[in-house]
Image (cartoon, rainbow, N blue to C red; front, side):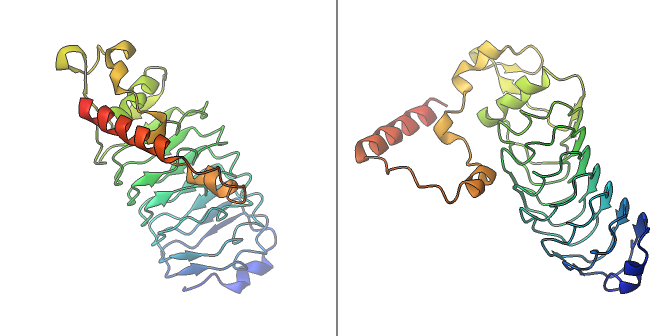
Length: 259
């Protein structure tokens, strides 16, 4: 099948639908509009590369969505709006390159599979409001670092898989080591060796005070596209004076000269 058949729209009490292993290329805004009782939707192993915004807004009871092994490259910010009961999302083995705000309105999401993609950038508040997120799979992507606030407000997070990424173990990732020391769950796939006192490599005996010079200045933190998108209509702050810009450049040169 190359599209979602209209015949399913007459099954008003349908709770589980599997269209795995077909040739579906697009999910239109009206493709699923009459399937309001669905709890489990499996679209795995198709050729999906287009999903219109609003395609899932009627699926208020959906708890499982499997979009794995497709050709999805972009995740628009409103793509999953309406999935307020969703607990498990499969997006593994697609062509996703960046994660911005698409998951911000999934309050019951517990398991998120983003492995085997091409993700190289994640917004620092991409997972904000996912208070029930328990399992996160990011293995086999193109990630070299993670934003410092990424896991800051995920109280239920216990399992994080990060293997087979080109991690760069520099100052930007020191926060991750500190964060893992406070967790009791399973964090696998990011094994960084940071320099301790006297330029010695410290894997297990590192103390927070050992790397005080390795703090990333606030002005070097990555911009949060989610917050920028939500405040795009706000007036811009006044431009910096040339004196402030020069001072910032001097500090920038001094900071990197020490590293």
